[in-house]
Every structure is written in C-alpha cells, then in structure tokens.
Image (tube, rainbow, N blue to C red; front, side):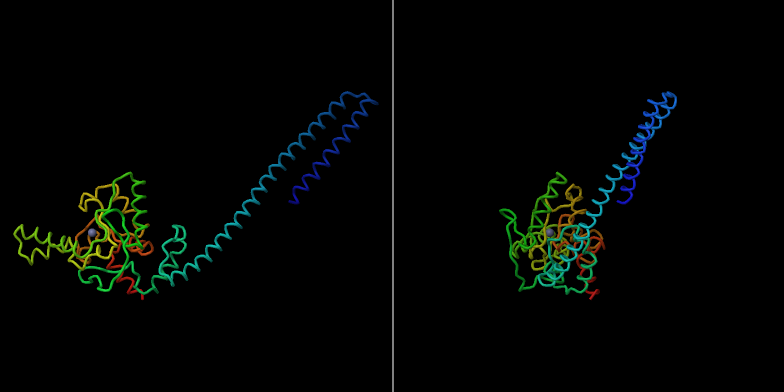
Length: 313
Ligand SMILES: [Zn+2]
C-alpha cells in the first residue's frame, strides 16, 4: 500500500506546483503582458494536468488490482480451511469406516482425496465386507447368509443396502443416455434359480446331449441352484439378458460409469477361465464404489480382486 501513498503525495505536489505556476503566470500576464510566455505557461499547466490524470488512472487501476489480490488471498485462506475441514472429516470418516464398514456416501472428490488412504484401508481390511461375498461354482451361498430385501418394483427385489445405488444408476443412465434400461432380474430365490437351471439343462438334453453334458453346458450360463449371485440379492440382469444388450447406449454407459455406483461387469470377456461363466454383458454385480473402482482400474474380475486382497494382507 505504501506505493499508493507515495503516488498520491507526488500527485498532490505536482498539482500544487501547477497551481502556483499558473498563479505566477497570470500575475505575469497582468504585469508583464508577455503573451508568448503566457502561452508556454498554459502548455506546461496542461502537461501537468495530464500527468495528474495519468497518475490518477494508474492509481485507481492499481487499487482495483490490489482488491483482487486481497480477494485471492481470502479465497486461498477459505480454500485451505476447507482442506483442513476435509482432512478432519476424512479422519473421522476413516474411523467410521473401521467401525461401521465402508461409508457409501463419499462424494467423487472425496473419493479421489481418499484414494490413497482407502488403498491402505483395503490392504489392512479383512475380506469380510458383505459387498465382496464371493458366490460361484466353488463357493455356494453360505447356509447362514441372511440379508434384507427391498422392492425395486412389483416383481423385483434387491439387497436393501445396495438398492439405493442401483436406483440411482438406472436413473442417471436413463437421463444421460436417453436410452432404455430396466431390471429383468435382481434377487432370485432358490426355487426360481432351480427352475432356470432345470430349463437350461432340459434345453441341452432336447438338443441331444446327455444329462451330464447338458449340466456341464448349462452351468456356463445359468448357475447351479445355491451358487448364483442372484440368490444373495447383489446381482442384476439388465433388459432382455441377451447379447443384444452389448450394442445399447445403456451398456456403453454402464461400462464407463457403473463403478461410480458400486457395480462391476461380473463376467467380463476373456475371464471365463477364472469365473467359469461365459461373458455376460447384461449381468452386473454390486461390490461398492471403493472396490468397484479398483476392480475397474486394474481390469480384474471379482475372483482376481479377492485374490489380490488376500495377497495384500
Ligand atoms: Zn445374472
């Protein structure tokens, strides 16, 4: 600020000097009446006034700038306070995570800020997260597995803890793509799974396969009763559950965004040797945002991710 006072003092000095000079010139006009000198005096006065004007403009411009600078300083201060708050919240959240399981309400920004912390968290975390329950041919649904279901519509239900994310995913997908997406199948009870499986086996037997061959083929597309993810209410089949789904806007959107809602493509192309299930573009599994992000970024299937977590411990 000191430079502005110096400018003002200089301006005041120049102005006063000008006034004195003009006074002197007029005095001279009266007494000497030398017109030529008077003209020069007028020109000098004009030059001085111009200088004062230039200085004033420069001063007010600088003043404006200095205000902006002050604003910047303030906003930086606010910014750092926010960061401090966020850091505090993060540590609180980290505690909550340990106590309550992973908090699902992270914003995208926070998730990014937390990513390093989360990675550490995941490393040290035992794989007992309900969202990571592995159900496949070798890992049937545990007999004592209990959970609550919430209705998605008149016919379909989903795990109550994950249905919020599923609804949001469908809503956002519809809004952003203006495409068609609907849930054909969410939770299936054991008897529904039995019906599906028996139908598939029958289909193969009708085409001339032996029962043994038919069962072998059937399990690559319909899980045996007791080994289907649909029985734990965390898997969803979209639209007509066929390969046409791969060509839809909804599928493209899901491939880019599903992880943000905690969903993964459960049976990706090229992973059949691990999942023992053929590529199913329509079948998505809920694992939670934090896990889904890592699974997507590393190109894992769920089996690989769980192995990865075990090796981290
Ligand atoms: Zn499915």
